[in-house]
Structures are given as C-alpha cells and as structure tokens.
Image (cartoon, rainbow, N blue to C red; front, side, top):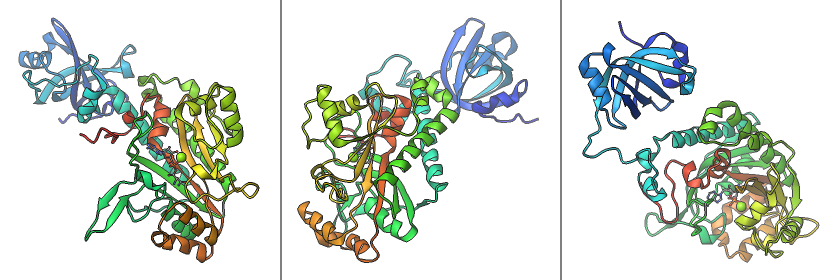
Length: 436
Ligand code: 4AD
Ligand code: MG
C-alpha cells in the first residue's frame, strides 16, 4: 500500500494517518533512546519523533547522526500535539535519506549568529531559514494582493519594456547597456511613460516588473534593482491617485493579516501596528510638512527633498501613512503637472509609511499640454527626439491622466518589520552586492 505524500502545511488533515514528508533536516535534538528530527519541506516545519525501540537499528542510527540540511523522506504517523509548533508531530516509522550532508563540509549556516555579509554571500542557502521563508511568503501574498486589487478594479495588466531609449526619472540614475551596433539603451527606471500610452488605449492599466536605479545610496531603503507596480488612469488627477493609493495599501495589509499571521509571528511583527492602519490617511501639503519638520528639529529648508529622518519624523506617533502632496516642481521629474494655483508646485504625492519605513509610493498627475511638456523636456536637458512618441500622446487626444508607483520591497519591509529592504527580495542588488 502506498503512503500519501503530504506537505507540512496541510498535515492537520491527516491526523492519525501514516503519511510521508519530503524535505530537509532543519535541526535535530537527541537524548539516548529517542531523537527529534525537525524536518522542513518549504511549506512548514514539523518535529518528528524517532524511538529506538520501535525502529530497525539502521533507521534509528541514520536519523540520530543525520546532518543539517540533509535531504530525506520520512514516513510516520501524524499525531496532534498541543505543545508542538503547528500543532502536530510525526511518529517516525521509516526514513529514506536522499543525501546525507557530509561532516567534512557541513551546511555553512548554523543556528548560531552569523554576520550579515556572511549571510548575504550565502543568500542562496540563507533563503531556507524560517525567517527568510516567512518574508518570501509575505512578499508572495503582497504581490498577489496587488494584482487582485487592480484586476478587480478594471485595470488591465500591460507589460512595459526593460530596455528603454529614454530616462523617466532623471538621467543621474540610469544603467546604460550596450545594445547592437553601437546603440545605447538603458535599463528601465519606471514603466510610467509606456503606461501613459497604454492608458490612452485601455483607460486603466498597470505594469508590474523589475525596475533599475543606478543610485549610489547605501541606505536601508535602496536597491539598484527593485520591483514596482505602477497603475495609470486616463481622465484622472491627483485626488484619484490618492484614493487609489490608499485603497491599495489597506487592501494589501488586509490580505497579509488575513493569510500570513503565522509568518508575521515568526517575524515577531507587532501586528497591532498594521491593524491600526485605516483609511482615509492624513493628507498634508509639502509646505506644511516642511514647517512641521522644522518645528520637530529638522534642518530641512523649503525646496529640499525629505531625507530618511525627515520621513520618519513626519509619521512619528501616527500609525497611519501620510500623503504629502504639492512638492516643489524643481525637485520633481519632468512630467509632473504644475498646480493651477501655483505653478512652482507639482501635482505629485508621496505616501510615507509609518515606523520609519519611508516613501512607499510616489506618483501624481502628468502634464497633458504638448507645449508645456516640450518646454519641460528642454529644461531638464532631455533629448526631445527620444520622447517624440511620448509627445504623440499629447498630440492625439490628450487628456488629464495620473498614476503612481509602489515599490514592492519597501512595502514588504513595512509588513514584515525588517530593518533593511535587502531581506525582502530573494537576491538583492545593491551598491556593493551583485552576488550570488
Ligand atoms: O518615486 P519613484 O521614483 O516614482 C516613479 O518611478 C514614478 N515614475 C512612478 C509612477 O508614477 N508611475 O518610485 C516609486 C516607488 C517609491 O515610492 C519607492 O517605493 C520605490 O518606487 N523605489 C525604490 N525601492 C527600492 N529601491 C530604490 N532605489 C527605489 N526607488 C524607488
Ligand atoms: Mg519618489
């Protein structure tokens, strides 16, 4: 009779049955005539109980001396155990060891503390740890929630290119790539410009993919390669962006709280902080934000961009993210629609997450007037030829339109409460990190 192969996450459906689990040895405790292999299979971790008296001698000996991360298939009877993590244990009946990790070259990551550089060098193995798998599952949940939110609100996913001929977010953070026959292209900083074209075709669209910034900043919030979701809407303005953005944030938090409680517990995340996030989020103008920051002791001057500490100060004491709008045009990208009442201000908004997680969303209303757009391109020293197709959108049925971008890793870092966003993507790319 063949024994059903089950995953640890669903083991509760097999209480009292004999099943097998295919996984890896996470840890092992032993005491003479009994040993407790902790087995992980990617869906969870279960404690197995192997009793010497009930097993063939070779089976018990093999298990008792097994090394960390050896691959094995254990067969045994599932037993509810209130004290066990996950609520179940497995009483071992037999075991098949696929590979015993050699003692000569043991698994490099042990339960003891390792430095971050060591862990990052072994990222391909570090991912197997309980904490890292929890983060990856939260990330998965966030990405699924993002897609469900847009899909159920009338948005069509349209992928935008990664090789691009023009800058979207300023020329200082472009990665240049040698294309064929001496042509230079750049890795995309944002799908926005193409999104705008797609929005004129489909009304409401989003793109979702990797984006690149040659940003030489070594902060806990910057990657050189990160994932961004960007919605874009035709016939829309700044207020529509704010409503859509706060809706997205609470929807994603709701899903994480609904489906990833166990992971948040592993991460020791204070979930009350996430539960407290409700719409509407407080709104603030840049002018008032600068004044508030100065009162709180920041050195910021009107016209300056917020630093990490400014963003932390802004949300201090509030569980809610804050929406800050109308930044000075001078510190914003070329495409922002100016405020009718004061053209020195841009119709852009940043969503600043609480607890020091900083800007998670940036967006706003785009210039729809062709002359103004051309003028701005020139002011920003951007070659109008490269943007000719983009100007077409203002020549053929131009309409007010708006959208935003949300960085996935920043959002996941906030959900998980991680100190640095490098843990929120499987293989982070940073200023001094391109391996493994
Ligand atoms: O504010 P940003 O630069 O906006 C844009 O790229 C717009 N074109 C988006 C749009 O309107 N369609 O970036 C948007 C978000 C930020 O709020 C942040 O969450 C994330 O992308 N982000 C980064 N995440 C990690 N590392 C970096 N270096 C990031 N730069 C931006
Ligand atoms: Mg921004």
